[in-house]
Length: 399
Image (cartoon, rainbow, N blue to C red):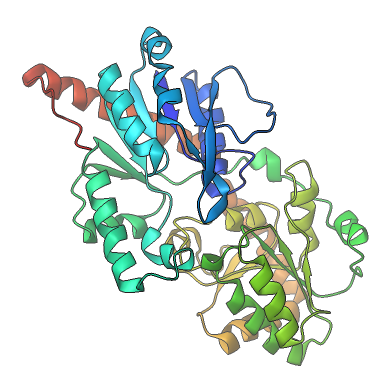
């Protein structure tokens, strides 16, 4: 099958959407499918293969990490794309890529599906704080409903996200297909080397958070929770690996809470061993995001045998199961802190959770989930062809 993907974000922009696209694309290619990807040019040379098309783009107002692709620059590729004979367009993000994806699908006369990666209802007000939260939520719901109902199929990473979309009155065909993890990439991590590199004593109790340092990740909660852990374990350390727009706010909060000796910001880490070492260097991985549509970092930690203490909200509800390498805690500072302290004080229990975590993460292997996505593509294209044969339509896409 020939698949044309289009996205408003991709590497070097590091986030879950970029990781999901890369993972699925790699696995679909391994299954013998051809996957062309249209993404922004970020102005720096990238080690792309020949099926990645970089598009001239400009910076996004209020969000300097992202780029807006130039519409005309995408459409300039249409003649060459038509010659390739694509079977389906897969839109990955809801901004410029959504509308251009619809246009490309119409021009190529193929069906279109879209992944719904981000819980925008609980996201926008962090970045547009000068508008009322209620109004932004209404806008996000209407925006999502119109976009999802304009396509042939919606792909969501969790059942919780599908429930949300059905609540928005999204009636389009939908499938729950989470992103898998590349188990080979997380088979081992040198935690001891990580601790040496960052001058963390071998026996120091250490918690790790990996992810975009963004307001919606609820890292504020982890810091306030850490204050309670410190009352029981004075030398506790929280390592925050990642970068993002909330970093300045969080550094200020660390200072206000007097946690300067208990928190370490270390920035983004490459998947060349540095990230794996960070996970493995922690005694526990902690997480409390309210907006995750899946939570790949939880699975990455568990694949390395690192037990997780986390809330189970939205997509993390599907990922986490108590005892399967994880302890589920409420979003309340004291109970969450109690769960962390108890696990830190029970090394035997952490040792028991490690093999369970690895075994559970293996059930989320990327090749298995890529096959599910390929099967869904086949279902959508078959249904599309049957509908077109029964009643050819010229007004399928509404945008």
